[in-house]
Image 1: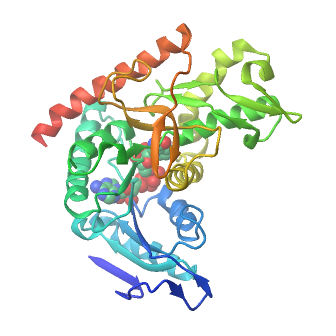
Image 2: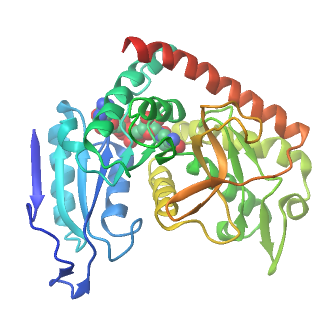
Image 3: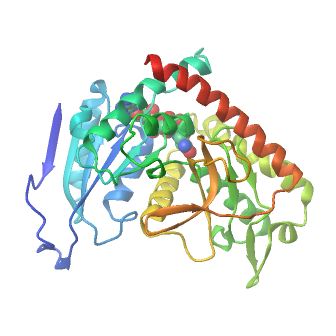
Amino acid sequence: METIYGTGRREASGTMSSSNLIMSEPIRVLVTGAAGQIAYSLLYSIAKGDVFGKDQTLILVLLDITPMMTVLDGVLMELQDCALPLLREVIATDKEEVAFKNLDVAVLVGSMPRKEGMERKDLLKANVKIFKSQGAALDKYAKKSVKVIVVGNPANTNCLTASKSAPSIPKENFSCLTRLDHNRAKSQIALKVGVTANDVKNCIIWGNHSSTQYPDVNHAKVKVQGKEVGVYEAVKNDNWLKGDFISTVQQRGAAVIKARKLSSAMSAAKAICDHVRDLWFGTPEGEFVSMGVISDGNSYGVPEDLIYSFPVVIKNKTWKFVEGLPINDFSREKMDLTAKELSEEKEMAVEFLSSA
Ligand code: NAX
């Protein structure tokens, strides 16, 4: 099934008479899992220009599975009813060959959720199947310059699976979301110091988007009364920073589920917007952010060929590792632990990949 709303095949001429703004050529953005709860917040933010800018027109493509098509129709109707000037076209579909065609950006949110009694291995297997297929569709139909952002869990390993299944697209074009964890860390520090999140920068999430992730503030700065200082100096509580701070960030997803009976959605959508906007426009001078990207074996002692969350800076739509940060023994141990988990996940995924 495929529903299209909008201006059909009208070629972008560079201007949109309705708004008197000079508009650029529309970019084609896919969101998968589009009938789900994260997408419900995310689609509105993207469509109104929070990510690609207020003068970038868009063709939004929504993919979900066949049983969700009636729900997706409702999402499509709501997007129409928002009457947003940037939206040239919205395409709702359950077909990969439609969804992945000519993409500039793919945000892969949909995945197989963990069901009661499901083993981690079975979950991984089900997701290898999904991300192998979507990776192959990217390879076949998307632009070679496409930026692929994987959100659906296990996000790091799903991202690796998609990348391996799309050999004609550069590995560097794939990243997975750890920005929610990054934002959680930033916010915990801001709350503790009594400043706003904007006053905190350069937190790092290392490793897997799981409870083994390592939130590291050894290199982070906080602005207190107009002066930038190290987080350890501002917080003045090493025990908290090495204990409850880390476990709060690691367990935050579970805490939200316990309280809300649903997983993080508003904050996840906000984090996806932050991640993609930075990929598109770059990171501010002097700041770095966390994202899961392919390891090269030469950075921070992380084994090669894992999608591991690192501190990165972004310029001209290209990310680079932040290099040369000193790593103490406390950090080393935690960074290795999360790398070990990712290596195990990779081993299982590779095994399933050959049989999926
Ligand atoms: P929902 O269950 O509300 O929505 C998921 C949607 O994906 C459903 O509509 C489902 O039909 C669809 N879907 C399943 N398989 C699909 C496929 N093969 N192709 C297209 N669509 C498919 O989940 P939601 O709360 O939106 O979360 C989505 C994913 O994000 C989950 O895997 C979740 O664990 C993950 N998260 C990842 C985060 C991260 O930081 N990396 C944070 C938030 C979130 O927990």
